[in-house]
Image 1 (tube, rainbow, N blue to C red):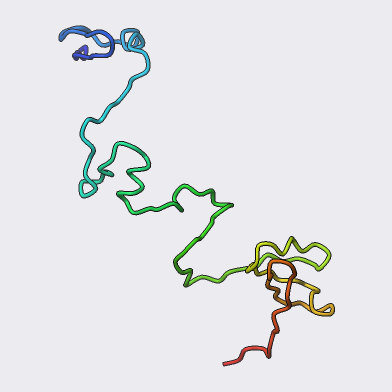
Image 2 (cartoon, rainbow, N blue to C red; image 1 turned 90 degrees about the vertical axis):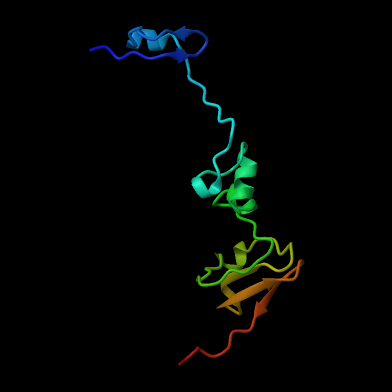
Length: 133
């Protein structure tokens, strides 16, 4: 039994015409246009552009950032352990801009320390006694 359908893509297959692989190949690449966006409540984004979709879903600018270059410009990070980049004194990066934190394996007279940049230099952060319960 042959399957028949009406198809519009540059020209029309009439009802009753066999839809064969050869006939479908004549259609070329299909294009889909959604005239009315699907509402968020119905599983859509209620948008016609990627930018509007991100806005409607509340994703913000972080949604378009690469995973290896995320810039946080507000808000709070909580519920996670942060691992500082680790360097020997001989390999620390530029201290500019100010406010960077790094772990230096030999930065406090040969002992490990955390360092904070002031924009010009790396400053040792005094490490106190070991925490205890």
